[in-house]
Amino acid sequence: MSTAYDEPPLVGLDQPSIMAFSQLRLDLQAKAGVCRIRTPAGDEAWLVTRHAEVKALLQDNRLGRSHEDPATAPRYLNNPMLDMLITDAPPEIELREHLKKRTLYTGSFAARRVLDQRARVQAIGEAMIDAIIAKGQPGDLHEDWAMPFSQQALCDMMGVPVEDRSQLLAMMDRVGDTTNSEDAYSGMEGLFAFAAGITAKIREQPDDNVVSRFVESGLTDAEIGIHIVALLFTGLSGLASHVDYGILLFLRNPDQREKAMADPEVMARAVDEVLRATIGSPVLPRYAHEDIEVGGVTIRKGELVMIDFSLANYDPRVFDEPNRFDVDRSPNPHFTFSHGLRHCTGAPLVRIVLQVAYTTLFTRLPNLRLAVPDDQLHAHPGGRLAGGLAELPVTW
Image (cartoon, rainbow, N blue to C red; front, side, top):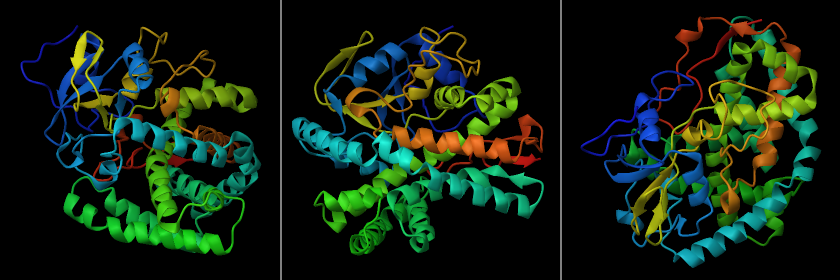
């Protein structure tokens, strides 16, 4: 049943429980494909809730990251990392720069190149499982597996030296803080300088990694430093969340886990089902470059648009029994990697890392089970732009 609101309702980061939508978000989806909301930053925006409207807007070049006055642009959250995504470049320039960046990223994250690195990702995972077993039971797979495995796998693919990873990640965590925006903004200059320094090191000793390929493209250290931060920022929290929630989905559905573990092709499909089924909050800002009519409403030029990929991934108009975890779901047109010209160029990397994460974990710990009742698990408490669970206690 749809619900009427006299004032735009506040849509924030909170979830009532893990792997569940707030009733508000469900009510908004039932009400319309595009709904007026208020953001945690206090601004008004449009929330796009249904698959058809999400697809239409992702294919519409009148929606993008540019705004005539970024300083006064409506925001979802007050955070410097999100502000990085807003540009004052004219829409046609923003699109041209986006396409240029896509070309750079596509070559660096090509599926063949990612597959060639699978053995390195596997080795990282095996060493971490060894450490988990040595540490003993019970274990916390968020702290000991989902976060560090995601961090080390991505940093390794990027080429970030091992000795620089902990400091880089700590600096990123600081600027990702959504509760202390003053401290977050003050950490930006040091973060970019540190990332540029990492690039300078890699320039001296290039290898088969993403940053080395950026160096070959002719970019400066400072430019590559921005790419390092942006890629890790957009990749880490989402990847760790999918590792956490994928483990939970497999533990909740042992028959589906058995199917996936028995056949690599099924596991590949299972990864996409985890990507579809993991519930997150709409965070990345987009702005209308012109008036756009969609879903029976008119989005005015300069207005903020929040695309709710998770709600669209559960749209019953497209997905049969969307609340059912089905490793054989096909087709599976989820939007977790966005769509069209905005489709994530790092998708091959994410798929490989998740396949290795689940296969390695359940091969090494076949009797893995939750150490607490399911209802005692809680989402990451917030304060950072990292997702996933607060902790994932297990025994084996």
